[in-house]
Image 1 (cartoon, rainbow, N blue to C red):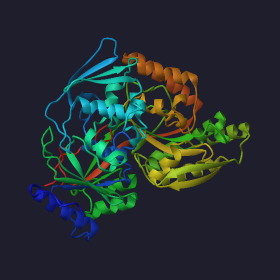
Image 2: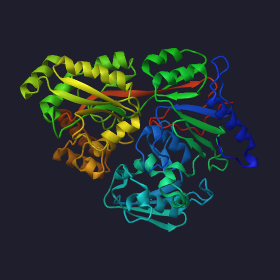
Image 3: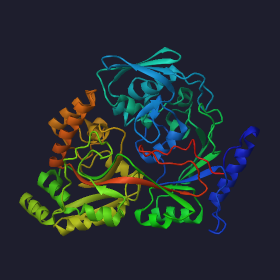
Image 4: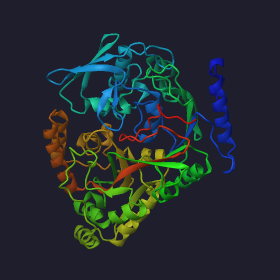
Length: 528
């Protein structure tokens, strides 16, 4: 149960008590009704941590964005940046200095002040290996701020970032969860356990975390934009998609994300539910091991792309909730997406010829599949269908299935010595992010990146480095177009689908909408 709350929070304690009793003793469908002012959210997995600098999954981000704020944030309904903890900022003419002017009078949930020193602490902890609390990491997305050479508090309400060179995605990366500002006092108090004892400045503050049961966050009455309508949010990890659907239908949850495509029809058109959809920058793909085995041969990698009937996957398995992917940049980044790039067509005969030419007829492949995870698009059904397509062209495919966090623990350190291919999905904030973190030679797992298939092409490296240094959007677009063409030909991945995210809410939920960022922003949501 929750720890006792102060008398002033008696109403919240009552609501949370009802919510927790509800969760521990599930009612029958006829009497199921979650408490008013408490939103019960079905997540697709247990969070790994509530420390924003140490996680990478959107599943975790959906909680974090309600506990913390960044200097900037994405404007509602877009990926354009607007002020948050910083009221304003200036950028030097050479693009290497960003000076932020902070809002005054904001406190962290632990009562300590938010100021420029807290901003410096947050980034130094992540970037400076000599920082006394750097050992609370690892910090896998510190790549986002690799160009930062210094963070300096000019006064309590002014902070300056100095970059080694111009870096176009900098503001966008500050709006990503990796840039959220943490309480220095809480990090000092809890050390490596900060991820279980989070403290930010967000609309909700941490209540409790019961492993594999729930994470509870409570209304922050002192939130700088005004206290949210909800008294609490209960995030429940329900890994099985059919169980999430059953809980939604029985009234055990108020909001579910990543609705199985074949279940959408059960909610559409019903007055008891609202179905929400939003296009965002999503890519679902297979990482192919380029270091060893059959997939180290480009012909086999291209054959895998030809062998997979992607149109059948998006129409039959995904029920039309996605489109066939052509490359590593999502169409949602319209300015950077190469529209001339065509998806690999379904051509099993050509796939067989390429496999035979490469000398890998009858070769065995180990395929990592996850039970579910951030944006993974019915991964078991997808994996099984892909297995059948590849076996139809003469490859023997053995599937190994893992729970999401276990799956990440196997895939992120690299596939060498373990598997030939693995499912993966990314939702990103900038066209730089996914290729820079997963396709660059300097992003091999040993270097702290997510290039788990060990793809390496010096020309791709050059194009990515140039694109992130350019502050001219047209020039960046040209570089990304060229990069996409090379990656498409090299085929380090099987490019499968771009998803339209979805969610379902009960009729009692008001003010909810999905964001292109794939985050859940709940500060304006109500449930009378």
